[in-house]
Length: 520
Image (cartoon, rainbow, N blue to C red):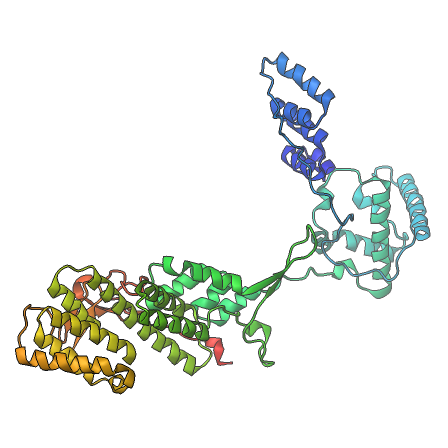
């Protein structure tokens, strides 16, 4: 390749190939020829080419250019030593010859070539020693001449070999002999079997596996696994109006990385990449119907749910918000393999929404200095759809807050709700049940509220997830198209505060939990 680039006059190719070969002298010559005298001097000096360095030093001085100083810690730039050495690696597999030519046969063909060329030159002096003329090496019978002309004029065979005829350099006698022997061998095969290079077709490029994944599914996770992140984002925007992808960026990358595996080979050889599928275990499924293996599954999300519950009981509210936020981000990238899993995903979505809203209310309540607002948030906290054991904790906090701030009517309602919970019949909650009964009795005797708060337990309401205030029945409101968090009309077209991804108020098809091809 270095000689080829030198014949072409391609300076950049010469320099690249000299780097690959570790030929410092050639790099110096290329830099000098391209006018980079200072770089040429530094290269020669660093690599110990003293004669060339002295010559370049005189050239720099004659041009009035400063002599650059070499770095004492400079190291030689050399390519790694190749482990496997080979020449002329084939790029495509051509049909093999009927029999291999040995050295004796090659010699006989070369002698025949010389005699044929000599006789042709005597008959037609204008015939030159071009590459095309050298191909006319068969017998001078009409049959072989027609086959040779057909071989020369066949443009498909030329396309298979490439544009090597344009390379203007001498291969040397050995290369010419090898090329000639191959041509004769193919011509011989064509004569005997009736098929040769002229009938050879270059194999068509196959369809990438990732293209099958995208064609077989309308689920964003399958597109992300195939590397079509833009297509996955487009699907998420269409289906659940996602406009902020920052929250799920790392999940999209995880899907792509988890859909394939690589087995590292020897040095200088690319790794062997294997695609992982989730549905090829079924013998009826063909490769064109394959779907990628995904790293997010329903059992994984259920484990996150358990972690969120555990942290809620331990009052680790920031961690609870992180756990349920992860579930909300991962649900659109999880494919349900059955109807039961699809139902579980939708249920997980509702649970995550309620717990994130409850945690946001709890964290906002801790920052309040106003007793009235603090009691309001504690009251809203009890209207989130929590697990019974967790609702018990919320009612206990709201009851205590209202009683301490002398809102006895509100405290009595919380105490009554607390006593009616099935969990209160347990022996371990006997102390709490006794305390609730005392608060209820005392609150009924005082029967007044010290503070006016925006809370009416008798009227059903939703919680505005932006302002954390009630939206009573009959009030116009909009919802998040993904998690269904409620908002007042004034917050339309804003990003949802619960999932942090979707645009509020957009009408969409909703969450897609399974791919079309999953019916197999």
